[in-house]
Length: 496
Image (tube, rainbow, N blue to C red; front, side):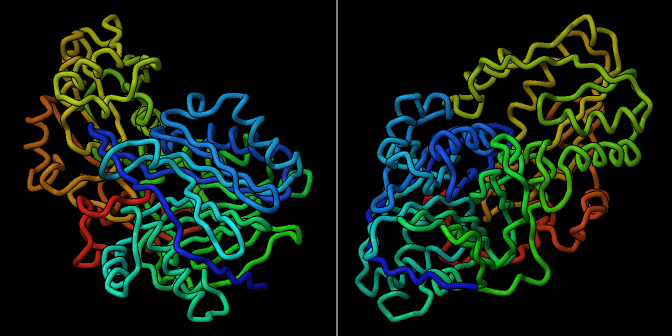
């Protein structure tokens, strides 16, 4: 174990925020970091592609030349944010040496989607520049910010990332042996962090372990960290282990070093929605392969809520894994009757309801030959607001379906999330204060059933992580950490 004290001055960071819309939940970012790897910018670019599902608003890469930090960010998908010239330029300023890199894909929570909000952010430390990227939400950021402002601290953005760096500065000025550890110990909420210094990378995970964060090793010997194992697979890294809740891992010329800033929470609070929706099916998350978990959820759903129907059709793409399990368990025909148009932008960014519904019709093509006159089971992973789900069901009905039986592979989402998921206020959740029958009528389907919370927990708990270590607050309303009274999602723009 080795400590790397960090001495910082106040950074100048851009604001962060954005307001997606639509039925599908939005995760809050993917992160990547590495040290001692060849062509770090190009490697980070590939890793961001693998993590594209975690953020499509903006992307950024920061590298170090051993003295300072150099950054490039852009809006939209990774392929749009970077050109080959951008990557070559980053490699050139890094001197062609296998030093360090951090990278980030972003979704925002509130506020505008603007170039200055793209991460990694760069701050100025006494020992040099630092770049930081973050996945998660801090539920006590408002209270911490209020205290720091009363003490005279000036903030240049509305991000909880800047609050973190101010806490590091405060701990440094007060002579803490490990300012980063001292700052992290003051935080409450969800965070997976990657921090680039001129001589090392530090990665950290909150004591509850809400978001996944894993370590890999390159064949050349360098180490990398990423939100999901799928990024390790793409760049050819071998999985080493997860970053433990409450742990700081340093990647440097000496290899991989570890220290703790807090004990792991008991129980932990892994986000169960990573298995339901967010993570790539190809990833291993919290010790279990996501594809296998989702198929089991579909099987359990078929046992709990069977339907007298002719075939099972997945809602692409998120319902495909659970639909596979449902059809297998129900011994029903599986058919791809709904085909996505992959060249249409995401429906949640459309500014009006009419435009969103038009985008839904353009995005999904229903094969009338398959659905006409058929009693179909449509399997999807979740329903958040219900707005575009109704449009999808109307489209399937118009294509000739005789009956539509909608099955959802998680329980009703009745409560907002404060820990890095864009679930809106309760009033905007279709399941808030509505029964399943009321939701069924609203969506215009012949039957509707959700997976039970007990069934969900039993299936995810079959892996190495027991069911008691998952956060289910969006379903149950039981929050592992209650948000600070000053915490308001519409006031503090969240980091991711």
